[in-house]
Length: 312
Image (tube, rainbow, N blue to C red; front, side, top):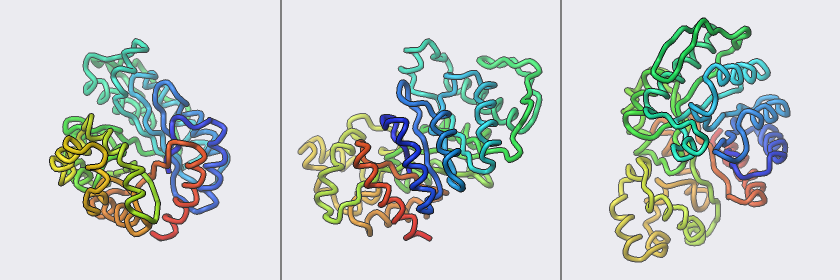
C-alpha cells in the first residue's frame, strides 16, 4: 500500500501496524515537495512493525546531498535489516526550482547521485569529481549489514536505460499498465535481478460503472497531461478521442478490458485481474494507492489486506 503525501503524519503508525498484522508485504511512504518527509515516516513505520518492508517513494536526487541520503538510508537499514527499499528519482523540476536545487542536467545528476549512494551503502570509499557530485574520501562509518536495494523512480526511456545500468530496479508511478511495465523493463535492458515496483490506483466497488465513474476524473488527469505510462496504454489514442468528444462521460463507459490496464478499479475480479496482469508483465510487487481522503484510505486498508490474502 502507498501512504499518500497528504495524510497526517501520525496516521503512519495505524497504517503500518494494521498492514503488518494483516500480512501485507510493503508500505510505501510518498515524499513530494512540500508535504510529509519520507525518511521520518519510514523510520516510524519500521519502528512500529516487525516484518513490514517500507519503501521510500521517491527521494528527489538533489534535495539532499548524496552522502546524507546514504547516511539516512544506511541508518534505516540498520534499524530494520532487510526491510528497506530506497527509491530515488529526478524530483519534479518545478519543485526543485522553487527551492533553488534545480540541476541543468537531471539525467547526469541522477546517475551521479545513484552511483554515489550505492557505492557508499556498499561500504566503499568514494572519490568523485562529477558534473554535479563531488566527494573526497567519503565513506560511511557504519554501512548497512544488509544493503537495501536502490530503485530509480523514473519514467522516460533514457532514465529507464540509466536505471538498468546503475540501479537495482525501478519504481513506476500510478497509471502504469502491463504494457508500460514490459516497455520499462526493455528500456532498462532487462538486467538480471532487476526489481520492478509499481504504484497503481485502487478503487474496489462491486458495481463496475460506479467504480468507473469515481475514477474517471483520475484517468482524465492522466489524459490531460499524458506521461509515458498512460501513452503506453494499448488504447491511448482511442481514450483521448473519447475524452475529447465526451469529456469524463467518454471515460466512464470505456470497455472493461481498457480499465484493467489503468488500475485496480472495479470489483474484486477486476482488481485481481489488474494486479495479475502487472505481475505477468514483470512487476515484482504492486503498491496500491488508496483514496485521497484518509478516512477512505482507512477503509482501503482492509481491502489491501484482503487482496494480499487472495494472491498468496
